[in-house]
Length: 98
Image 1 (tube, one colour):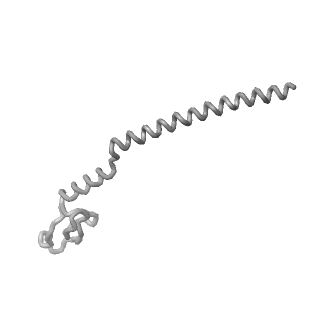
Image 2: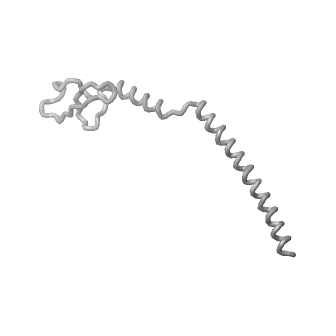
Image 3: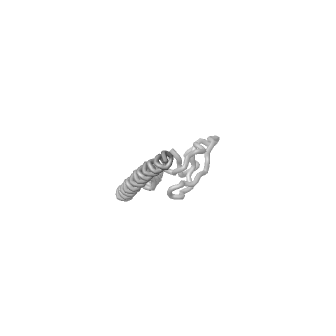
């Protein structure tokens, strides 16, 4: 656990002076990868990160609804192109037989 005072470490210990990414407090850590001064700050940072990543339910529902309506529109377009294609094939067959 990081400490706020250098005197808590042995005199010959390898200690890194860091700034907490959450609250900005200067602290001393025995690991070079330490980012937060306490478990509390780490917890708050993780909560903030998770809330940023979460997509609101209403927004998700709107996106699903929009995708479904676009899907239905595209299916209709495909059906129209298929029927047009069949009509053109009939016309081509009639012209070839003449």
